[in-house]
Image (cartoon, rainbow, N blue to C red; front, side, top):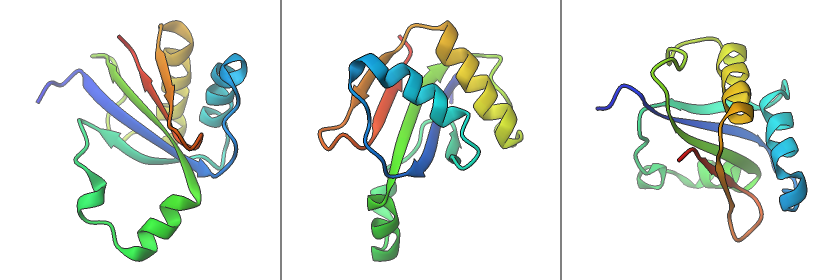
Length: 114
């Protein structure tokens, strides 16, 4: 396991993802929204579809996700407070170049820092 490679998945209520011109602001707003949840923060994640039941599938369909893949030795500890993790990610996102990919449904967003 590489201790500097991290995945953060932020979950929020399903809403339309804006076009490219507004996507960076949208991501920052979701990171600062008090109702956004941290669905996962840790090392590389296994495929969740391996153990998802019907109730979970329904919940997933009514939510949107931001998935951040990044490397940083100074990332917060995995058990840090939600506000600390989201605040860190917002700052990291603003300060570093990222590739942003919106899924075909316009629902979920993957953010990669190359």
